[in-house]
Length: 249
Ligand SMILES: NC(=O)c1ccc[n+]([C@@H]2O[C@H](COP(=O)([O-])OP(=O)(O)OC[C@H]3O[C@@H](n4cnc5c(N)ncnc54)[C@H](OP(=O)(O)O)[C@@H]3O)[C@@H](O)[C@H]2O)c1
Image 1: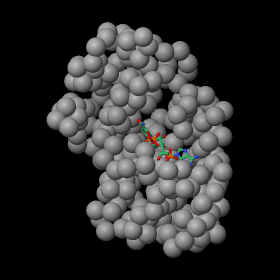
Image 2: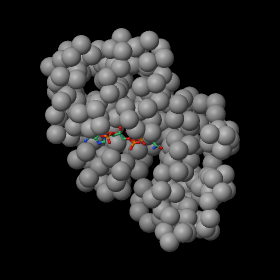
Image 3: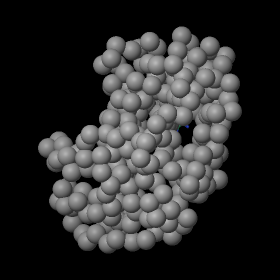
Image 4: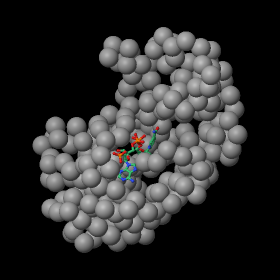
C-alpha cells in the first residue's frame, strides 16, 4: 500500500513512517523538510500521486487558539482537496482525548481539525489519543526558565508514541471507520511528577517547581478532562518503562 504521512518527521510521525515501512508499505513523507508545505499547499499534488491513504500527524506548536485553528483547518482543507484530486480513498487523522470537553487554546485547533475531516468528502478515520510519554520532555523544553524547570500540574494517562503509531498504521491498512475508540496509556500519571522524574533520569541540574498554569485548557486537564473513558483501548508501556528506555539510550 502507498501511504503518505503528513508530519512524518515529527515526534510521532517518525514512528509512523518506520512502522509502515517495516510492514512493507511504500511511504511518502509530507513535511517542509521533504519539500511539501501543508499550509501553503505547495508540493502536495506531486507527492500524492498513487497514494491510497494519508495519515495526518502534522502539528503546530502554539498555545493560541486562533493560530491553532488556522493551522489545522488550513492543513486539513489543503490535504483533503489534494487527496480528492489524486483519488486518495482514506484520510486518517490523529486528535486528542477530551478535546471537545476543553475546546480552548491549542485544543481549539484540534476540534476544528476534527470538524473539517468529518465534513470533508474523503472517507475518514479519526483516532483520539492521550498525551505521549514525550509530552513531559516537550514541557521541559518550553518551560525551563533561568535553570528552573516549571512542571505544570495536570492529570494525564500518557501513552508510548510508538504504540499510537502502530494503531494509526493498523487503521490506515483498514477501511475508513469514522471515530474509533480512544487510545490511552496503561495508568494515570501527574504531569508535574512526570517532569520531575524525567529531570532526575536525565540528571539535569536545577529545581523542579510544580505550577498551575493559567488558562482554561490547563484547568480542564487538572480536573481530569483529558483522561480516557472506560471504553478506551489501553496501551502497554508505562511511563516508568519508557523512562528506562530513555536512560538506556
Ligand atoms: N504531543 C502529544 O502528547 C500528543 C498527544 C495526542 C495527539 N497529538 C497529536 O499528534 C500529532 C503530532 O504531534 P507531534 O508532537 O508528533 O508533532 P511534532 O513533533 O511537532 O511534528 C510536527 C510535524 O509537522 C510537520 N509540519 C509542521 N508544519 C508544517 C507545514 N507547514 N508543512 C508541512 N509539514 C509541517 C513537521 O515537519 P517540518 O518541520 O519538516 O515541516 C513535523 O513533521 C499532532 O496532531 C498532535 O495534536 C499529540
